[in-house]
Image 1 (cartoon, rainbow, N blue to C red):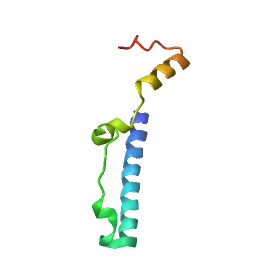
Image 2: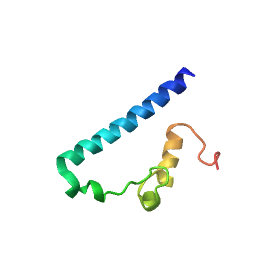
Image 3: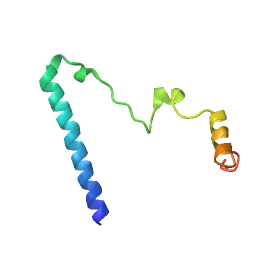
Image 4: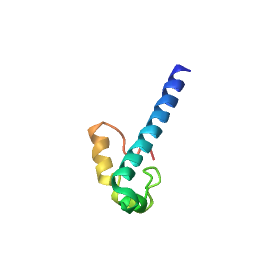
Length: 75
């Protein structure tokens, strides 16, 4: 229960800090800033960035060898 409360408190703090940063930037640069023209992308649903992120098959094979794991065992 204590861990849950700590996580909830951290989430609230993160939301607060995010809003503070946006508010400060808005105050400094106003409505003519790039703040109203940004696009937010998710790292869990990468869409257009998918082909540019992650590991190649060869990189995964090398990592499996490095960490003594079977590349084909997890398929």
